[in-house]
Amino acid sequence: MPTKPMAWSVLSSGPYASRLWEGAAPVQDANGIYVFRLPLGRTGAMPLVSVEDMGEYAKWMFENPERSAGMQLGTAIAHVTGEDHAKAFEAVTGKKSRYEDIPLQELLDQMPKGKIGAKASPGYDDPTLRTTAEHFGPWYNIFRDSGGNTGCWKRDYDFLDEIFPGRIRTLEEWMRKVGYNGETRQILKTGLSLE
Image (cartoon, rainbow, N blue to C red):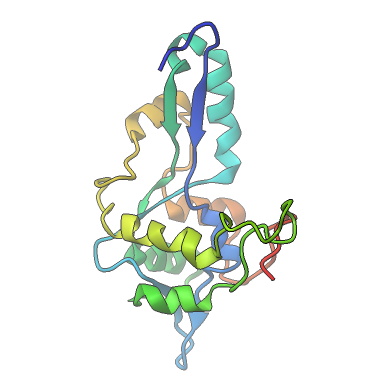
């Protein structure tokens, strides 16, 4: 696409690591082990994003238009498997942890039934609005095929290192930085309604 007369670029994120505070937090089983229940299979991986790092990438794009014009820059900490979730959590907290692969439908059944933006959008009954399951469900099929930074959701980690050498590079590093301990807390602060 042309970048003149106006230069443009796109900054892409992905699933935020901070989703672990709510919605994707581990649950304790009967033995007190923290269980990360995700539909990723054995080798699937999510390119988790550190919201805390996003500003650095945006700043670089504005300061380097000769390189960023016409670019779609995909950010991420790393492609994180279900096993990686459990290992990072155990390393940071010292609490026993494991990953449990679950069927995608089980996760979708736990999501709110309302449409995203239903009451916050003009014409709330707009048929183009989707439920959380309709919106987020397909992502997990992509994640299942993205292990090892393959498939549709690839990231150029060497380039991200060049742009921001101080970036967070592992889920364990993110957990240590934010003091993650497996407890839940509300982080979503939007006007979206899921009722």
